[in-house]
Length: 301
Image (cartoon, rainbow, N blue to C red; front, top):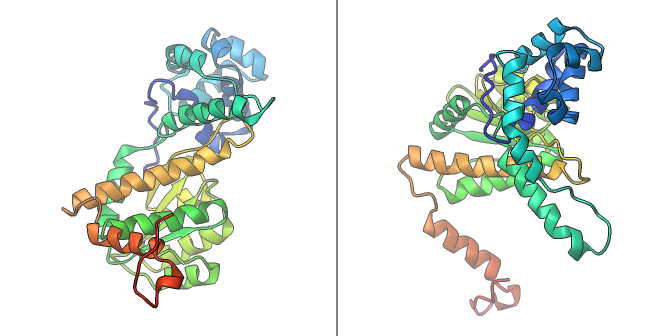
């Protein structure tokens, strides 16, 4: 598990990098970080003293908060905020007034912009470690509950499609039993956007106690899930102000699993898609139950 943060956000991704770290800061540091998120253009033009006055803190607190966020100091943070001003100027404000046909396209464009920055907190060294562990795992158990439950099911389907067997039980009791049955050489991937879902954490604790490698996929740099994980992938912490902004965090996790599947297939010398599996899936979804007696296949819908 990587303990040190390294601020190297892509163009336009500085705010997305900051947001997942905020819960780990002391209250005064959180005030500084939230001021940056709320008024990045203003903060980019401030001195440490100006920001300290705005947040009711001190110069030293502003500098320590910047370093705790992973930057070299406040000046480093300011430079990145200045760099990102053009990208923020292009971002579209999404309203919900009028007919859906008037605001729905802009909503999708805003979601695309958020997804473009979703990788800002990801440590690519941790991603490589996750690929190596999952590719060589004897058993691969994927745990997701609440809003992360569909992600676990989609991931399992994706791994089946790429010839990497995995399991993702939906029932919480079965999840824990499966986690307890793991051992050395097995991998348990636990998904929790907040990193604090108690049901998912129970399985992570059980897998860790059993000697399995725990991979945590979350939206925050510091959480209980990170403490329990041998490898942590931080991605997709939504900072959107539009009402369904949290959805982009889940979509980012789905995309990250798709990337894991591709990387694992490449690491194992496997094709990214098994044609036989895809043919079987298409046959299943295309079969009309009324045609079972004749063996005919209905239209795919």
